[in-house]
Image (tube, rainbow, N blue to C red; front, top):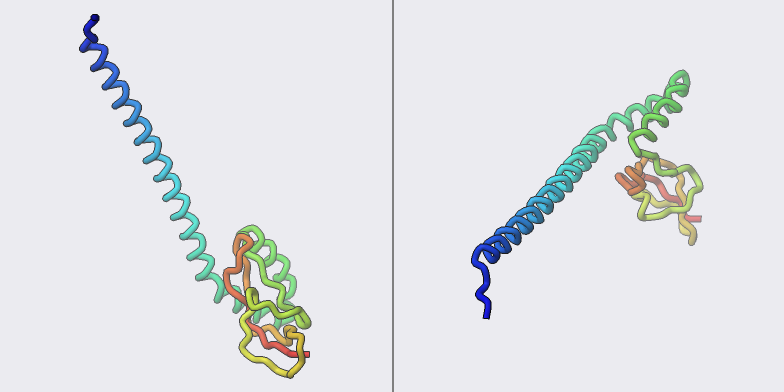
Length: 139
């Protein structure tokens, strides 16, 4: 019978240790990348939330002063570049509780539609960031 070479066993053990260490490091590197991306996304979302009141003010100013209407297109382009879009809450739109927050309901019909938008809602990266605050009319 042939005895196993102690050097070969040590080389095999060290090779296995090296492979495990490499795998651990690669997993650590991937985890750090995921954490960095999550942190960036979280920071962007927090920034967008802070900008919403300013957008509301700009929206009110544009609707109050017709000479500011050209600003609307520029604002829409900027919002689009930020992956931010207004939720369509125009009058007559069917009420959807996933998109709208009803603060007042009038009428007694079966169908619920938007009567008035009190505060616009927004999508951020195709998900509802803030539902639109609306007055609902039952017809």
